[in-house]
Amino acid sequence: MHKILVTRSSMPDITEYVDEISSLFESHWITNAGEKHEELTDRLRDYLGVRALSLTVNGHMALEIALSLLDLKKGGEIITTPFTFVSTTHAIVRSGFTPVFCDIREEDCCMDPDKIEEKITENTVAIMPVHVYGNMCDVKRIGEIGKKHGLKVIYDAAHTFGVKLLYEGEWRGSGSFGDLSCFSFHATKVFNTIEGGAVCCRNEEEARMVTELRDFGIADEETVKYISPNAKMNEFSAAMGLCNLRHVDAEIEKRKKVNDLYRERLSDIKGVRLISERQDQKSNYAYFPVFIDKDEYGEDRDRLFSRLGEKGIGARKYFYPMVTKLDCYRDSYDSSETPVAGRMADSVMTIPMYADLSPEDVDKITEIIRNRE
Ligand code: T4K
Image (cartoon, rainbow, N blue to C red):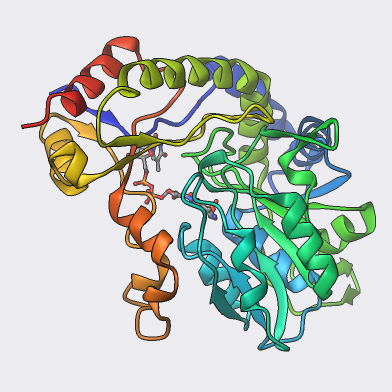
């Protein structure tokens, strides 16, 4: 059976990658901020439109390093969302903070700014929202709330590589919002370095601190300033990033075509809700979520998910169960406090989305969705 998985890693032509890594076989310098790493750092800073950034081994460590950079009071509360990949919550808990879950907006699954202030207590130290599926949060409102209450804002921007937002008359890269923004460059993301990530900072001084924090806290050969892990990106990953970056705009264009075709094919099916496209945002088409209303559609999400699976379509339920219902968290948090997130998690399914997904495959997938049993 021809299998279609939820995504497929973007990869350059093999000769392009071999050319890119050939100098490493001469220099034998294959990690610890080598030439590929430094070049990728410069190129990404320009591409993402951020003042400064530092690369990391993955998106998760970018979040942990970001939390350690800001010198937040240990044990403090961080307001976050339960509708995310578990990495966001793990980063908060593993860093010694307490997550406080705020509900999300139905229209785009991002944190609901109307519900943030009621979660603020004297122990709150930061807000960590997530730009879900590539949709930007209400960065203006969240920024205002952060400022008003003296709270740091750290965005989990894992899904928004290349996304731009029209903000006060200017197109701005998603990584330029908040005190810090963290990207994932995992194999399954729009842009990948196989595994990788970055912390985007507001100035070079902060990026230099991230660079120390991701390298055991080492400032120079005889100075170790912080107690910190190893979270550096190696040269082979950086080389993959340099290759993939050359093609990422073309890949996003191709993803847009897949997106447009999906919307054409699915928009009139009763009980299948899509997230509306926004005029103030240039999307990266990272994921294609569909929300199934069981009563209107006549079948629940799980049944449709199984039917797709039986026909070789590997949809995924990103993000189900919501974080507060996962084994490791459910005894500590009350899921009923975030009913919208619960509802969205119970009805969502992300269907295959990648640049080279063919129109024939889109037709096959959408036909299965259209023809319920
Ligand atoms: N914050 C958010 C909001 C995130 O979504 C993530 C990661 C993070 C933080 C943390 O960033 P990282 O530390 O991961 O950089 C995947 C990814 O592992 C994870 O990076 C991602 N979010 C999450 C949403 O999804 P799985 O377990 O669903 O991946 P897996 O292995 O089932 O792969 C999914 C599909 O991708 C496969 O069916 C085929 C395709 N694939 C996968 C791999 C591994 C490829 O084409 N090539 C590959 O090498 O977690």
